[in-house]
Image 1 (cartoon, rainbow, N blue to C red):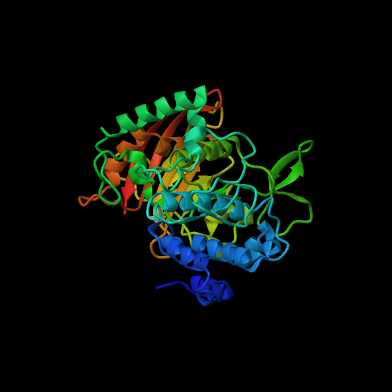
Image 2 (cartoon, rainbow, N blue to C red; image 1 turned 90 degrees about the vertical axis):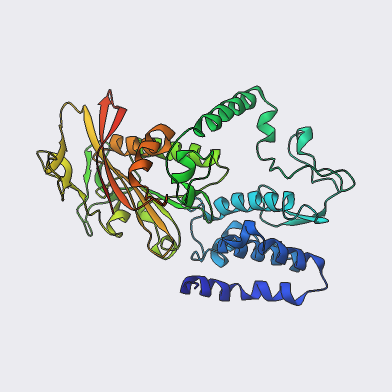
Length: 426
């Protein structure tokens, strides 16, 4: 059953789909219909709407309607005049759209005589015959990136995303490293979500729901402060303030966490939408998988989703820690860290159902920004993640919602080691 937002989105784009159905004499319309019905697009409503919108712009000869601003308004329901430099949703989905189109025309659509492409730097699609030369590139393409003529034997479909890097020494080194990592990951014994297929690493299994379908929304800490760099910053109290509020800071651990996630998603040839907490719009967020980076004290958006049940953040002038709401024999009621010197931290990794059925929410919250970084790194490395998977997987191989508490050793402002000290599986 489609959500009300999905239905309204389809109604708003009704103008787009009707011309495609109406112009049956144009073979490009039929091609678009085949593309959006393929397995590459079937699970992503937004990518279908995106392609339908820009395709109509091309077929009707209205390139002025295929700008980032217009696409943001008509496809992603942003308000007119929104700040596209801070909201990258169109650019993020355009990158994914290009990938999905390339996958379609090298697999299900390998026999298509015409290819649809969205040139980089533009959003208006082009239609070209498969045997024709692609538009000139800004720099020479490697030989393997040239499209083969239709008369030649077509090799088994391969997505050529990394061909450019293969032509450089650095690319060859990275390729060897990727082969070694992929080969070694097949020996992990973690269970799957859904059931783990032979050869899949713990990362493939754990992150699977976030690596397929619509890009997840990554929301990083963006606390509100009063003061400035000269007088010092302090947390702004809830509500309005007579002083100017500073809301453009985040922690160094959050920065490192976003970098870690970028590496992970790039390795799987997919992407995510990144937003600071204070810019999140919940009509959009409720429709997708969510990844929160930072504690509720620093990430206001976390206060909207259901709170953690087992490990709750607490902070007093004397200490900060996680309250153990359901302590087991031998466990403390509060996991607290020393203020000075800061040699250790605690962090929680939590997986919960999303705001809508079928969606998931993943949370990384440290007592400090370094604890948050350690939590993301723990979930991004296959060895530590394999340990977690064994504890949260059901006998059928499905990952259950959970809250896991980590103890983090710090040295010189760097998280050195993370140890799983307690876990609750729901």
